Image 1 (cartoon, rainbow, N blue to C red):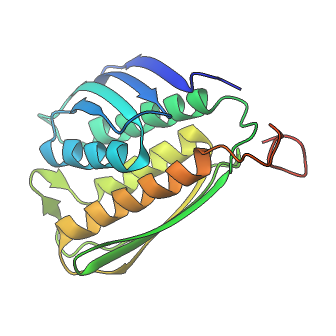
Image 2 (image 1 turned 60 degrees about the horizontal axis):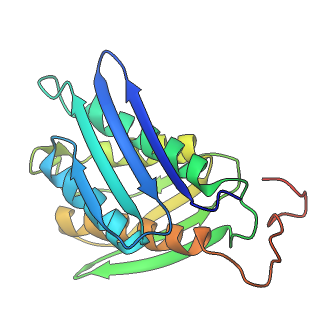
Length: 198
C-alpha cells in the first residue's frame, strides 16, 4: 500500500501543460487554477467533499475552447488518483452517494475495480455555465474514470438549474470516492476482490 496515498504529476502536450498534486487522506484543501472559473469551482468542491488535498495548475489552449484543458485535467487527475491509491489493499472499493442541492439531486456510484467505465445520465438545461460548456462535464468524468481505472455511474435524478445540477454531481462523486478509498478496518489489508487482484 502507498502509505502516503499521494501523487504528483506533470503532463505537457502541444495543447495543455498540467501540474497536479493529490493527497487522498487530506483535509479538503485545494489550490486550483485551470483558467476556467466554473471548472475551478467544481474541482474545489470535489476536493472539499472528498477530503482530498488538491493542487492544480493548468495552462491550455483556451483561445480555442475549454475541451482540451478539461479533458486533460481529467486524465491527469485520474492518473494521480490511480497512483495514489496504490495496490488497493484494505480499501472499501465501492462508494455510493446521493447529494441534493436545492432542487437538484445527483447520485454517484463508484467501483475501484481496475475496469474503467463511465455511465452518464445527466442532462443540462443550458449549454454553458459561465464560460464552461456543460457538455465538458461528461468529458472530464470520462477521462477521469478511464485514467483512474474505475467504474463510475453518475445520474441526475432531479434538477432544473444547471449550476445546481453540476455542483450536486461533483459533490456526489466526491462523497462516493471518499467512501470507496477509505480503509476497511475488518479487511486486514486484503485486496477487496475474490480474484485477489484489482
